[in-house]
Image (cartoon, rainbow, N blue to C red):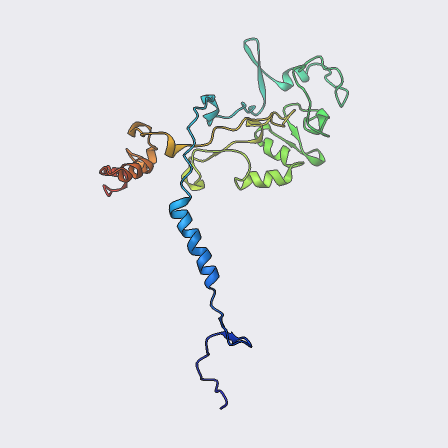
Length: 249
């Protein structure tokens, strides 16, 4: 009798020439998974937690203050007891230098290590030393130092504009009025901008630091941190009142 499309499909099986029936159901797979589950429950055991190793670090590295002092506009330096602008000296005597410089008599502390940019007049104005120099001879003040860097480091400058490069202090919210974006020379030495190797800070071990004091909790999470609340509940204690979240627990 011919089969119709609405007939229920029969169980997948095959019959050998000797009459033995082989079912297509994956019993061996189920057996293996069952054995693995039993091993994880009773035979695997748990690895002991690693011991917390105390790590010493320089607390000053946690400061959010700029690494370098940005120059004013117009730039000035302290000479003796007086503030002197660049033009106060460069406007008096002939200060033309061999470019790139070979033997500096003044500013001898400067070590020029800026890749291919090894000429003073690539950045500094020839006539007005109070100015920086863009392409085409356009002069800008020291308060626009990021524009000077942008003429060669355009990709990094665009990243800085949107907050992907550089440091943001105060707030992530641009509309808060508290956000402060550090400029290039507040982090980098303009004459040798590459950073020296930095040793990473120790990784957080919050859950293995032992009991947490309310005094050490994060301010924006109220008088007690969520991690401490979780540990209290986990050990059967009553959770503390979350006053910072409307008194809810």
